[in-house]
Image (cartoon, rainbow, N blue to C red; front, side, top):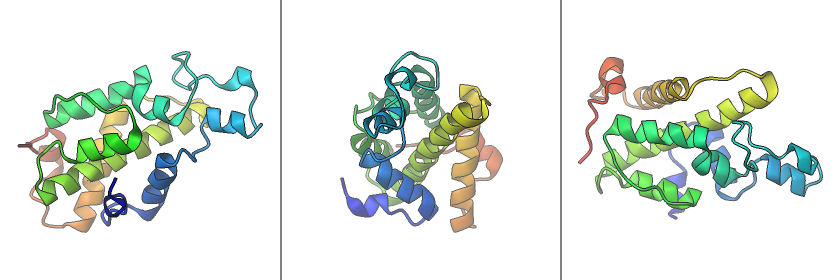
Length: 172
């Protein structure tokens, strides 16, 4: 993975640092907390209630609930692709789904960062506040967040919120 693509200037630093920890499996997921003797074996189940152990790979890629988030993101972008099994590979693969153009790659990376950030926030809401959102609500938050990050950096972004929301952003 290219380290330079991880340090994205259009994404808040706290999200970039979060992703850096994610790629190194250093987030306080339940399996990591178990390995550090913070949780016992009976507390390892994923917050989505799928019955699997909550690891980074499971939570962000393989969980039925959070995997559905990715499915809707791909659909919003008009993409059909098989996703890699490992997070750094997923990031690279997702970045190139629109081809090799730098602007398109950058926009896709911002969407990827917004997606993992919102998945983590939803995980924490479920765990600590017992509040849950539907898959569609999480996707709506991702769309809004990615648009906000891009619009803050590029006032001349050729999308308005309505167009962005409807995915007038076409790849290819």
